[in-house]
Amino acid sequence: MAKNIIEIDANQYEEFVLNSKKPVILDFYSDECVPCEALAPKYEEMAELFGEKIVFLKIYRQKNRSLAQSLSVFSSPTVIFYNLNSEGKMVEVGKRLTGAIKKIELIEQIKNLLSDKYIERVLSYKAKRRVDVDVIILGAGPAGLTAALYTAQAKLKTLVIDQDLPGGQVKITHMISNYPGTGEPISGWELAERMQKQVKNAGAEIISAVDVTDLELREEDHIVWIDNEIEVHGKAIILAMGAQPRKLNVSGEKEYAGKGISYCATCDGKYYEGKEVIVIGGGNSAVEESLFLTKFVKKVTVVHQFDHLQANKTAQEEAFRNPKIHFIWDSEPRAFKKTEDGRMIVTIENVKTHQFKDLTTDGVFVFVGYVPNLSLLKQDLSRDRWGYILTNEDMATNFEGVFAVGDIRSKKFRQAAIAVGEGTIAAMACERYIAGLKHKYTELAKSEMLYSN
Image (cartoon, rainbow, N blue to C red; front, top):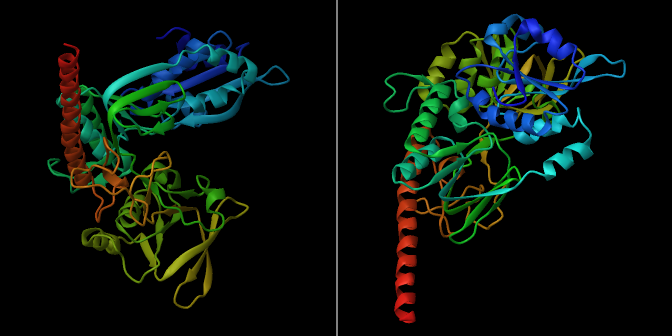
């Protein structure tokens, strides 16, 4: 166990948490847990920085299941923050952190335990550092990981940076049945895990669950800032940031996102065991996620703006056969509200008759497409009318040394297998580009030597 971190079990919870005289942070972790592995170095860093004032604890969730359940901890990692109240009693404070926990999120919650001035003073002593690589890959979905596999095998120093956990949309896809070589349907999480391990074994480094605080595209020297601490320089950069769920932009959506409205069935379906939910959409994601939800819920109502589905035929046929799935056609949501007992009211409008209707449900899942994650880009890369990046057949953008792959790229179809192909092409083109730079500087050096002689 790292310095300033104590491993405890359920029998020691009262002694180390409830009877502590200092603020406490408790991390429930598990083995073979990718988010736990991503959190570990950040947790250790926080313990090193603030261990003098805070007690940092870890507890193995599987071997302390009763305690975890009594504290409503059902996933790993889950980090809980405790502090003494005005009566001197240790109580939970702030917000629990789960999943892909970023360093900045830890610091925000530590502000509930220590003064801002103390935190600022400690952080001011942290030395910023620079990292130089051949290739920066921004995004660790199938496209980015494939590109990293190829560049690493080409002996190019490769760093993959992802603001979430590796896997992109694949990791939150329930089952993937059309990816070559798997032999049978495979869970998205498992496929993402295999990709990540293969990339690491090839020699690439992956940094995940971080904040990319700035991005600057510069000729032959692109810069990415991580957590305002690490300055990464790369001769070439492959943009693979993927896409995020498209929002409906109707009344109540923003207010109830994560509080009754979800964009990920794999993430949140388990919370609706035995309940009823509404799914908005009619494409592949909407239908496939509806099928997944039937493992938990007793009823799924699909609300779709057209009178037919756009999903692939196999998924459609399976959905129509499933007695738990019902359809409301030619309708769109117009507002979301919450009832006093915590259920959701969805106001829908029939786009043909223009009649409004209120539907009451336990939860809402929205699957109406995606938008590219390009908020970091300041440079004017060429894009199509929907905002996706335009590239040539080498996946090169209009900016030298900048390539784009995956769901941020303009194209007709978006599938994991297609993203993998794009990652391959970009990596090979990137290798040629860097070889060209080395040749250019070699020739330049030769000419300078001749001139000096």
